[in-house]
Image 1: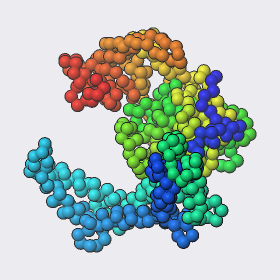
Image 2: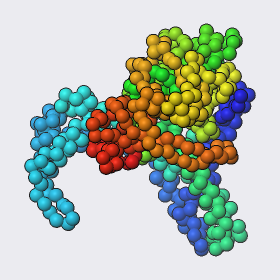
Image 3: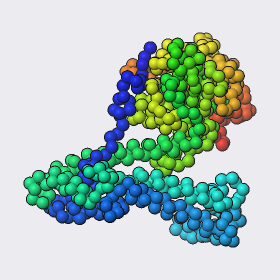
Image 4: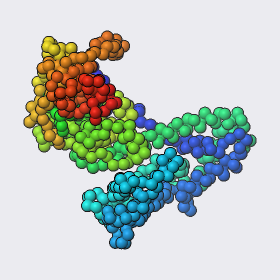
Length: 571
């Protein structure tokens, strides 16, 4: 047994308080703001004049800066964006009836689609096909607010789009709110930062710089101030990162629609990237690789509420004292609609952390508890799978609080899980999954099976598809996923090993030479196993394999070049 990445919150609070980024102090805010004004030979009056600008930018009333005044700034930004969004759509309202049709958009966009094309500095007249393609794209983009797809942007849809953009503007404003006077400068606690309070705080920080109190910053004083300025800016960056993460989590849990964790139950959050056991059953479709993780429930009286989250498609097999289970929330970051361009998703999230979440329920299943006790999240992002990083930065716990109403009593996370035992949360690496099928030790695919056994020591779970509770269809793989499927095909002669890769694997400081089959010749019509990789040689008289070919390199036996229509990036 080895315990990794666990936080038992009833015994320790370090998982919450020790890793959370501290709020920026008033002193740090003033120093960071003062950075643009302080230079060698600058005077107090010059610094004061510069800093007072920030006070009046924070929308003070007769008394000073108030939370209401700051919130009015946010609401004003949202109102402007709301009006701009509605006006932009109504620019297409040619008949003035307050709605916009596809025909109206087309009429407005046609002149734009016919504009001259600039290529290599030369103006070219577009062809009819180019005009049509450009027009279709312009109309399609303008019709995005048409949520019901009837070809008309109704008054309700205009309002919804305007409100969506207003919320984005509000989230953006919140990220930049650090430029305004913080309410922590309200020293007398009356809910107002007066100009006198503000100037006194700024003067105090200036005096920390002006060591000789001559009202002027010398070169040596400026050098010392530079160190404090760097620390203040780093603190401000930590605050911004914390705010962005919180906004992203808040946006992600919207519409997830799962019941809150009951107050009287032991709330346990478990997470994994993937698992050390393969499933013989698929969820969603058989081109997705499905893993299995066991959750053993220890005997006891108190009810247990489980939140189970993974990055990959997962079946959670709950065994033991399952009568203690008060409820299960299951989540995965994999959906049928997942795009492979993770970098593009990350860029989009950075630009708009409050943006809409991808559609489609996550690919996840649960076994061992009654169907009425199992609930599935609505989309990606509803939970953050627990790991060393997400436990340390608090995001796994923060997402659980936002989604399920309270903090988890225990958190456990593994990169590749085998068996969790709860409560208390523990992880065991020496227990095969229920109904595990061990890999064969002989046959043509023996070398590949040996790799499967090393990679999936918990075995291949022989799953009864009728026992899996999921929001998606569940079926049995026609060919096992991953390298297990490759080994099956080699055993039957459908694949012949045609090449090896050799190298050294380093694991925990230990190194071990390896020889791995990575090139295979196809001898008959096959289906590529889910998640399989490698090079596959296709003879002329054999059809292209079925299944997901995105991870493989498929080459023609005639010239060893990628088969037409296949991705060259894997070759």
